[in-house]
Length: 216
Image (cartoon, rainbow, N blue to C red):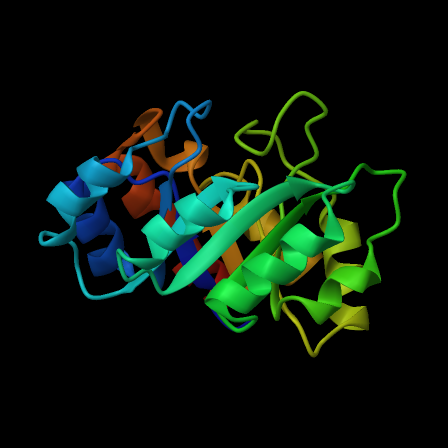
């Protein structure tokens, strides 16, 4: 089993970013959505940026307006992960894709279990993050999602990049790899002491389990 690439999301401290990178994270995610308990503002990120390790940086937000997207672009992020409801205006999707490029845009649609995945989104991005559906919000639930559905999407649309998110931790990552077979995973609450503050012990345990799962 090939070890998946890992994004550690909800980074709020430079020391957490450094440890995640040392352990093997490919991506670090920074949340700029104010309702999230893991949100940091853009000035706080600017203050932290010079202390960050040299791995890919991902700006995470929910349906940002173009002005805010431009602010994030100015901070030299590598990728832009945007969550949004399924009734989001198609013009917004096109504008996000045009501003940052489809190769740098990660779309995270809010798809209910009973809803089919909207293939119309494929025109706007090359990468899709599937988080656990939460009626009252966007991600951050700490609950696992439909791993079987993820595996089916990844299998049916191999030309796209797929990222598995939602409730992953050291205890369940082995099962997630077996059932979903993701090439990329996103972890946040499962490696935290509290929102925005990572636990070194949980981070280390998570990456250790990835090694164990790969060798099994």
